Length: 67
Image 1 (cartoon, rainbow, N blue to C red):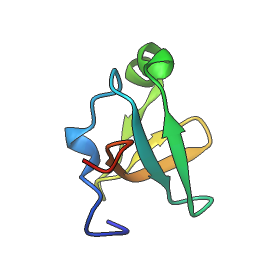
Image 2 (spheres, rainbow, N blue to C red; image 1 turned 45 degrees about the vertical axis):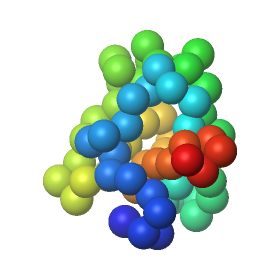
Image 3 (cartoon, one colour; image 1 turned 45 degrees about the horizontal axis):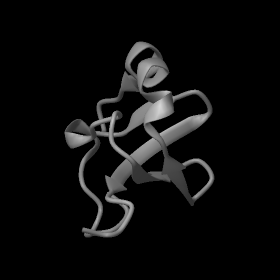
């Protein structure tokens, strides 16, 4: 995981707004629930706990407001 304040991807709910850390770009991505269906269909969990989706490799997530 990239930062101790981020949660593991296996606890991520794609129907909720969030921020996700993309390991590929090293940037934080803002998540909206509009992408939930595609994420459920196309995301692939990896052995290291990350999740590959489209061109991203998500390494952790957090609440939008930090709570």
